[in-house]
Image: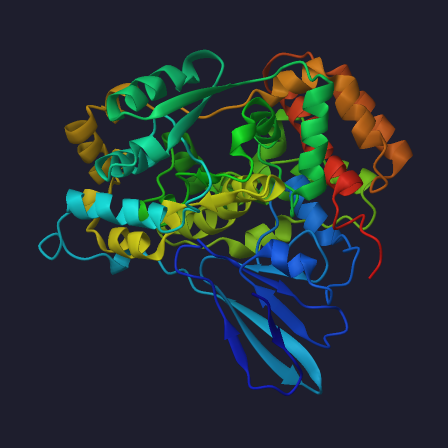
Length: 498
């Protein structure tokens, strides 16, 4: 459904649901003659009142290159905005023009949790809430797949659906990562124990013709650019398992923002001294992206997980480049880091890098993405749980209630399994397919070509270096490729005029 606000109508307040299951997307043209809004980005961009092709926002591109994400409500497009967790928009008319004022109020402060004597975890209710949040969103005529790992989030959903009797209506799929982080064997054993079918998806190092076609199809249809490291793995999934197209895809992301956003020990120490070392930004801004000292100027906000090319490198290749450091410095506060991290990473990085990657993938293959942990009823329940049941500040340990539930009901000892991850070795993919990546980048008209060639030559000369410099240049090439391929192929940037 598309809503419209016209000049001189009664003021309108727009906001998303509590945990961002359904962001609100806005089209607000530069002439401010009207404003469109919808919970579906596909429906919004298909509306004939949206001027096509869309224009690229250079400030948004600057954020993507240097930080990996455009802080909402802004996007990489001129005139397109996103209302995510905690963001409201007041729409009004001033001097005959439509105006939008955006406000942010984080809804999940840990100070709002109940006291231990007021609430205790109810495992039966937790499983019921997760099952209901999943099932009510399913399209009954389509096959259903849960992206599954050894982690607490997807296993809580799997357990909930198993106890609800959905074994014959759902398959678990997992990614076989390289090395010690691989979770596929654990996932397969859990699937067998719960009675679900199981599929393993494999990494692809050498891109063949069919892989390239799947990737290009993805970039044509994905609504937004994505810099997530796993971005390219997703179109390769659909090439390996075509049944995911037009299917129900269930993903376990979305709960850290209200269940306890806990950093690792290194991050926790670095953010505490960032107020001193970030003063070096005036110097580190002008270092090469791969310089080991370039990270020292990060703000407290950036230590939560932002990274990218240095401003020095960006401004050489992107006309009208914008230095993002002042924005991130302006977002720094001295509040408790666990609240700060949830408010910042939980609403920006998690939503517009990690979850956006999944939303893009579902859009590109016409699938129905289901995010049970982003359901409002689930979020309301967990955001009230007393702190002692959800995280331990001293040990930097999270999701305590889920650890207990999964150990008791599933025999999954999350402490013994340790921290594993659904990884994609994009660094090695870049190394083995370098011509493919650099050719796409060089064909992109966003960049100053002569400066770009020099930058790519510098990067490729170091591509086989060990340690951070080699990894960083491969990461920079990957970032440039993701943005270039989006710009080169995306239907909304290359549509005929209307």
